[in-house]
Image (cartoon, rainbow, N blue to C red; front, side, top):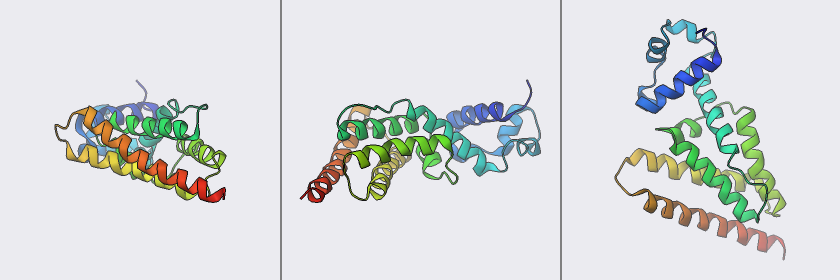
Amino acid sequence: MALNQAVVLDAAIELLDETGLDELTTRKLADRLGVRVGALYWHYANKQALLDAVAEHMLAVATRGVRASGTWRERVTAIANAHRETMLAHPDGARVIATMSAPGPAATEFLGHLLTTLADAGIPEHEACADLVTGFVNGFTVEEQARRTAVPRSLRDAAFATGLSVVLDGLAARVGRAQR
């Protein structure tokens, strides 16, 4: 099999899923692919560029969970849930997305759905509010994955829903103040 960006990316995601982010090294990835580390740099300039590509892939998957209909709260909830589920599908997935340094088209599209939803809802400062939503989702999921406890998924889901509801209640209050 010829080495190309897609092959390297797929192997990196597999290695992430098997070992977690701390053990995903370019040396291990090169060994897995049967090449020298330098061969990876023909396809990705450095490890961060590779991790950005992994995050892009994850956000492309999350974008499929975005709904174009429903109330703004339902749409933001769907976006937040898709974001979290995509991160939870990979060990340390939240850290990969939270540390993305160069968002690409998938990240831009994903964030665009959130920005459009908030703007359409009449939420003032929708850019800052989008950061609030993604910050909550990223932070909650980073903590969730870092704890690695035996807390049942149903309890984690309930805690996430409660926290997201608090964020959305705050955004709804801003809409109410803006309309006065």
